[in-house]
Length: 258
Image 1 (cartoon, rainbow, N blue to C red):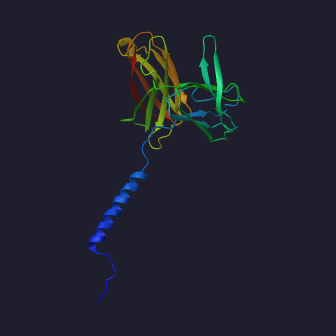
Image 2: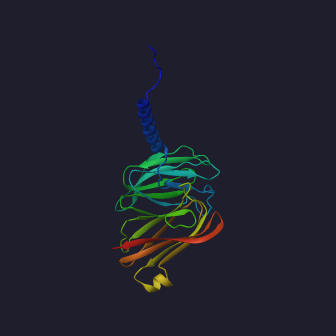
């Protein structure tokens, strides 16, 4: 009797199917999912100097409970961040420290996950002029314009509260996201403008609000108090990326005011 050492064709087919199925599953797991840009507050170059024009790229940051915010140091000196809660009462506001970072080196970072809503302060124990606020609330809207953008930069607008209220502060964050890296796009020249959709003069010649700046780290902020209810439009237009002129690119967003 001759014994054949091998595997039958049926077994080979079954093994191949199992292998391909397993490979497909591994392929699915290994492909990174597309996510929003990191929640990053950048410590800007020269922040340790009081005469610098700005110390963080955002001093009023908006996020939701459950999100992690990262402080990224682009300055040439070591920095430390103290994070505190802010409690307002009838006469004043009090702060209570909840955590602090170690020394953050150049290109280093510190992260904190905000589990609860509220108002928080971040500050530096060594450079008292370095301060900012984080507002954590579910009443936060995030919209990203990514289609038909000509310069490989998506534009994200974060708004708090979701429905603006007449006479109250409405806060905005403008986030520029590189489409290839999914990270903040540095060095963008832009305009952020608010128009009244129901007012022809506002739409054509006289916007309600306009700021045009150079974004160093890819994150900018704005605040406006609307005086009348209605439907408004916010636009963000890009003019330069990495110090080079580009074809102007405009993203449009709807802002409802009660």
